Figure: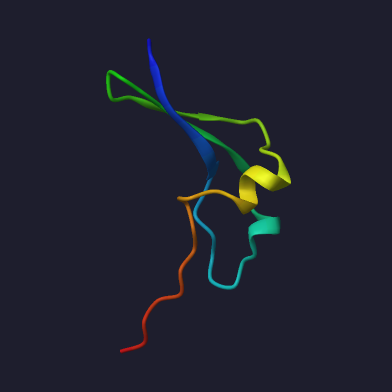
Length: 62
């Protein structure tokens, strides 16, 4: 299996008002064959701060 992506990811999406510090973090690994695995290993604070994905953006009010 060839790993093509590994980035910090939450185990469960945050609930409204929940902060990043309160989430259970690990890594989302994506393999060339298309399957994904959550690795239960905490990323460093720097990796969390520099992550590009898995962000909680506020919902636009209608």
